[in-house]
Length: 521
Image (cartoon, rainbow, N blue to C red):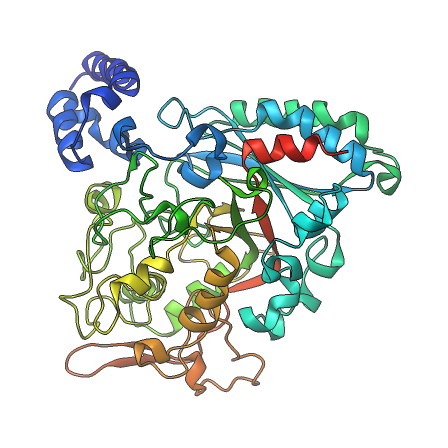
């Protein structure tokens, strides 16, 4: 295709895309992502690769039963591709001014109603329990929050198995007891220009409350500003495509690409005030205007040790091809995002780029883990239909992931640390986020019994002890088992490739709740 024809095709694709955003909700009544995508493929031809990367789901207004206009977009909206953003942490030293600040930024906080429109820059606001207290939320309301949220992440370290190098004593300020994070804000956009404009708008709104010379003397303190982002390849700092698998939420109207988990999960598992999988509405913070349409967020900040990961792959294999396979076995996907279940022998970029196929698989036909090991990261985090797992148990332990990475991707041949910080803000959202993540951390990440793997841990997120034990590479907890013919392989000396340097339990208020808090006296 000539350049002119190619540009013309893309222009036509853009026009088509714009038309679809306004119209497909009324045009699609009972179709699914596959049929919609097939129709678009037939019309736009060569432009489909770009469109496929952007089309992370289909919005069908006929399926909406949730109050989208009141729910913050970070709960329901996929991370854009590419993405750029900043996380900011505030401390409120004067309650009245804190509430004034909320009232000022409230018009810029993004809801979910315009989900299917163009991705403009979004602003999300979340709060810790100490933040709610600092803003003057009544005691009767404070008492209605879950005990785990009141305690905060640092004080739940035993439940999360945050020991040794991950212990809160080793966290960096301002997390845990090393700071007083009250309010968190996140600006995220699909271009640097939109991100900077929204971020500058936020800073302009709050600058009257900040003492930049003596921060502690200000009514509001900025404790942290941390940029993040990823280019169009959407790869984490290890060089692997991530953010592929998120649950479809019943009543949101958002139909995600096909996955093996079948029907959407009940809204109450992710947003307060709706029925969960058990058919009941779980208790929520009171009064109702404070709790309904809100949710909880778990933020965990990791430093990623990519050079050590590369060295481990290289030291335990005989060729680059074998090293790439070992890395894929540890993650459960190749670098492109292609799952091992569908591409067991080599990477398949076309499969990894195709949202209609890259998450549509189960483990039923891999009962011995010879394609995707039982201990692989993605199989641990979502066992799907693996043998001995009850699907209902898997469904109630799903979590919406909005994680973002920071720092440069390190090439796979680099085995010495360059001293630059790179890592991940794990952001998990669920109506019971604290309990869900505490379960995942203690059972599915830092234990292997649920997969009959004994003490083996998640090779990518588990807390390993090789260095602590003075090089004891025979520790059962630091092994990674890969079933194979004629005999399984066992890799020894897994290190902690992601170390925790902070985290918080956060409440995501609805837009109505933010207004209610801002009007307290």
